[in-house]
Image 1 (cartoon, rainbow over the protein chains, first blue to last red):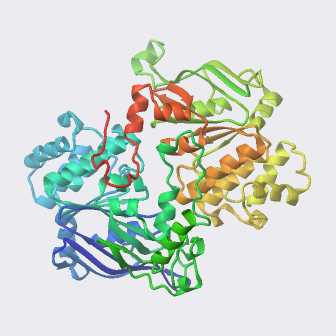
Image 2 (spheres, rainbow over the protein chains, first blue to last red; image 1 turned 135 degrees about the vertical axis):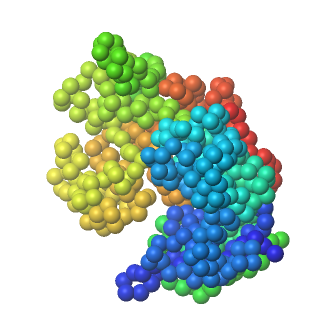
Image 3 (cartoon, one colour; image 1 turned 60 degrees about the vertical axis):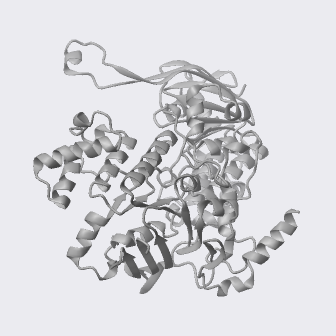
Length: 331
Length: 276
C-alpha cells in the first residue's frame, strides 16, 4: 500500500462571484521511502498540491480531494487528529528559512520547543536531543550554534536547522517546497545531499517541489510535471528526461540551459507566450495555446493521465502522432 | 576598448566597536571587491558568475557609480568614469544602463509602461522622444512587446513582460553597455529562454555590449562570449566561455561547475557531486 495517495485534488479560490480552480484534479502517489519530485512553473499549482497533504490552505480556499496517508483519511481528520498528523507524520521545509523562524529566539530553543510540544519532552532532554538533531544535519559545534539567533546563520545553515525541526518527530514523509531555490549552487548540492542522507537513515519518503528540473533529476526517482493546475506527465525521472512525451515536458526540457553548450552560442527555441494565469483557462489542455503541436481537438482533452510506458503516463492523447511527426521532421 | 576596468576595489566599513570609536581607530573593513580588472568590447557579452557575497553586484554597481569605488580605474572609450562630474557623469550613465533582478521593484507602479519609457528618453534628450507614441512603440517593438502595452501599468504585466519593459526603458536612453544584474534569475525557465534570446538579439541588432551578472552558470554558458568567475571579491578565472567551462583551471570554478545540477538523461550519475 502506498504511504500517500491523493485522488482528484481540486483547489479553488473565490473570484468574481464564482470560484476559480487552480488545482484541477491532481492524482499523486508516494510510496514508503521514495523521493518524488513535483516540477512546474510558478502558478502551476505544485505548492498548493503538496500543502493539501497536511491541509495547510488559506482560509478562503476550497479544497476537495481524497487524501489517504498510511490508511488514514486526511480530509476526515478532526482538528486534534490533524494536529497530530502534522506533528508526527509529515515534516515540511520551505523556500525561505528566515521567515519560518522566530527572529527573537535562539535557534536551538526553537528546535527544542518543537520537541517539547510534539514529543512531550522535558526541558533538559529536549535540549540534549536538539543538539543531537543539529549535529545530525551536519552543523558543526552544535552546542555553540544552539545559542545562535536566526540572523547569525547563513541561508544554508538556516535551511539545515529547518530540516532538523522537520525531521525531529521522525516523520514518514518530508515535504520540501523549493528548499534550495534561495541558495548558492554549492550549498544547494550540500542540502540536497543532506536530505537524501536523512531520507535513507530515517526511511522516510520525500516529496520535493521545485521549478528546477536539474534539482529534480538529481534527487528524485519519480517525478510529476505540473502545468496550469494539472499533472501533465508522470513517471520515472530517467525515463522522463530521456523520453519526455507531453509537449510541455519536451519544451520545458529543451528550454533548460546546459553547461555542455558553453561557447556554442545555442539559441533555444523556448516556449512562446506565457503560462496561463488562474481563471484564464477553459476546458481542455491548458498548454494548447503555446503548444507547437496544438490541434482543434485539444480543447476537448479531459487531461486524465494515460499510460504510455513502464509507470510513465501523460495527459496528452496525441503523443504517438506527435513523436511520429517530430521524428519524421528531425530525420 | 569600450569599457575597461583596472584594479577596482571596494571596502565596506564594518561597524566600529566602542573601543575603536573612543580611541578613534579605524574599524575593520570587508573587502567586497579586491583589485578586479577586465575589459568589455563593443558587441561582446561578458558573463560574471559567482556565489552570493562574491562581490558581483557591488562590482556591477560601481561601474555606473551607484557605489563609489575606493581604488581603481574605470574608463568608457578612454574617458574616466571616476573623475566624471555633473553633465559628464550623466553622459556616462546614459552610455551604461542597468537592468535589475526584480522588475516588480524597479518599475514605478503608478506610471504606465509608455510614460516610463518616454520619461527616460526625454530626460536624456533622446532623438525622437518629441514624438511620444512613435518613440514608445519603437522601443516596445525592440523588446518584442505590442504597442498596446504602452497604456498598461506594471501591475497588469507578468514577470517576463515587466522585465522586457525594464529593458526597453534602459534602451530608450541609448546605452552602449547594458549591465544585467541577475536580470533573468527570477523568471520561469520558459520565460527565461525568451529573455536570453532577446539579449542575444539586442547584441546583434544594436551592437550592445552586455555585462551579464548571474549565479546560474548554465545561463551564462549559453549567452556569454567570455566569462569571469568571482569568489570573495576576486576574479579567480576569466576567459572565453568554452575555455572556462570545458577546461577550468581554478579550484573554485571547478567546484562551482561540479555542484551545478543538470537534468541528466539516463541514469548516468545518481550521486550528487559535492566539492567542499
